[in-house]
Structures are given as C-alpha cells and as structure tokens.
Length: 277
Image (cartoon, rainbow, N blue to C red; front, side, top):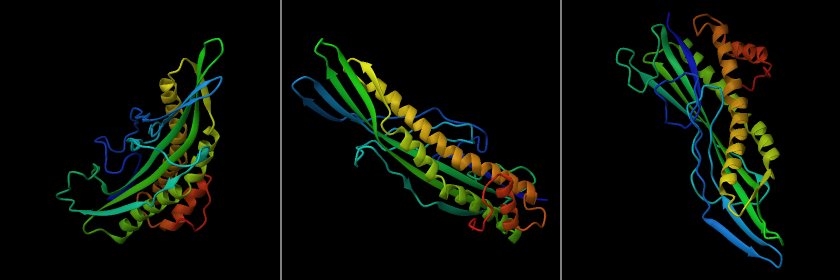
C-alpha cells in the first residue's frame, strides 16, 4: 500500500540538494562588510571603530541542506540588541502524475505515494564593533565586541501529492505541515535567548587589525545561534514527525491525524494541546 512521509531540512528555500532527505550539513558560509569605518582620536588613545556586518553560517547534525546566506550590507539599529525577523511560512501544494513524475519531485520508494518537505532557514546577521587603542608604551590592542545580532527565520513547506489523491493521504501530509509550523512558531524564543547571551561577547588581540578575530567571533556567534535554532525547530520537529508516522503507519491505518499528532507530541515531551492546527 502506498504511503506518505516527511523530509526536514535547515536551509535555503529553493536550493534543494540532490541527496534529499539524507543527514548532512554544508560548510560554513560567511561574508563580512567592513566598509563602515570611523576613526576617533583622543588625547591618550587612538580608537578605530569598524562595523563588520552580515555573516551566515550553518551547522548541526540534523537533516541539513544549507543555511541561507545573509545579504551584505549595513545593519541599522541600536547597539546591544537582538532583533529577530520571523517570516511567515511559505506553503506550496504540488500535484504530480505518478506515471510521469517531475524531475524536482524528491525520490520516492516503490511503496511511497506522497512526501512533505519542510525547510527551516536561519540567516544570522551580526554587527561587530572594533576599538583599537594605543598605550603610552607604544603597544596596540584591538577589542572586538558583538554589538548587535539579527537572525531571520524562515520555513518553506512543499506538499507533494499524486493526482488524484485519497483524502486520507491528503490529511496525513497536511498533518506533517501542521507539525512543522507548530515548531517553527515557537523557535524564536530559544533563538533569542542564546543570541542575547552572546551580545557583548568580546575578544582582544595584539595590533591594530582585528578583522580576522572579528570574523572568528562572528562565525562563533552565528554557529551558536543557528545551532540553537536547528535544535528548537528541525531536530525537535523531526522526532515528532517520526513518531507521527509510526503511530499512523504512514497513513496506512485508520488512526485520526489529530489524535496521532497529540500522542506524538506527548511522547516527545511537548504540549499536546489543540494548538497544532
């Protein structure tokens, strides 16, 4: 009997990997912008402030395709703040002819009839402030400090269903969508908490060139933020999705979808209230 399944990713919408559904991660990606420079001269010290903005990096053991790269540019806003942009989920329903499946359809096994693909994305923009000081003995030290963090969270879901499809199979794939949206809606709070812990994190280096230290610090910050987002969204969601499929036998038994969602949530230690709609 044909059945459905769910695939989860952390990555960039529209950038599916050929090895869809495998446990994988991409190399960290990052880009810096040090075009904004301000030199401050005082009586006893020379201070250079450099704003390095926009770095995106991805990691994590979850099913991970890639992490959306941030767009190079200047980060506006007050120092010492975390600003999270939680974009609305994008949901697509794609129909296909099982006899002539489109090339973009994830590979289905012989007994699979449908699949739902969820892509969780996190693009983390980081603003770094660098201050260079010259001591009276001629030594130069540069302090690199995390000044502002702006994660942008996204979720793109694609439901692939055969044409025609049975109502039970449709309900099963829609349940996978609802589970993904439930976890995505709650991922900003843990992401914010770890980002707030990183505001003000700093390192000091010898010399007046703190760019390398700044890039390392940005990589550390984005790794921490993205890891927490992955843990709170994709990894937690994946456990519930697997439990839901076990309970429903991939839409092959008669168990009600809402009841199966609540049971899978409870089994994984999450609230089983009716908010999963």
